[in-house]
Amino acid sequence: MSALNPDRTLRQPDPMPPDPFPPAPMPPEPVPPEPSPDPVPEPVPEPLPEPPGPEPQPEPA
Image (cartoon, rainbow, N blue to C red; front, top):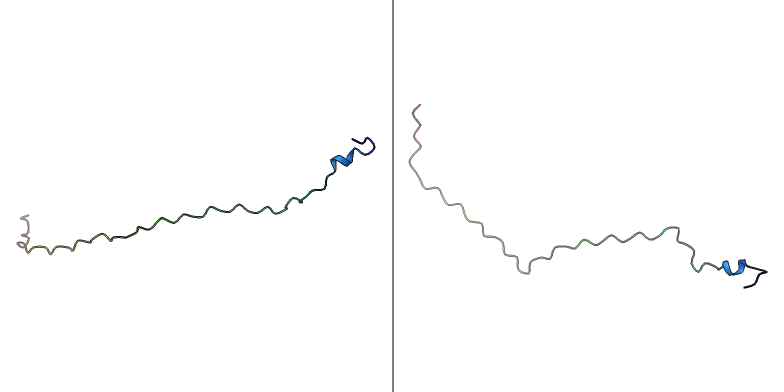
């Protein structure tokens, strides 16, 4: 160590100046739900026709 110039060892040129605008962290990519290999639609039961019942009698008041 040279006593004549002690600053020489402390002053090292920065290899890269600090980036004033650091890169923004990448947002995690949304993972899309895996589609079913063979989507089978649920069978919709057809509404059964109501059987013709006796006409509703008015309740006696």
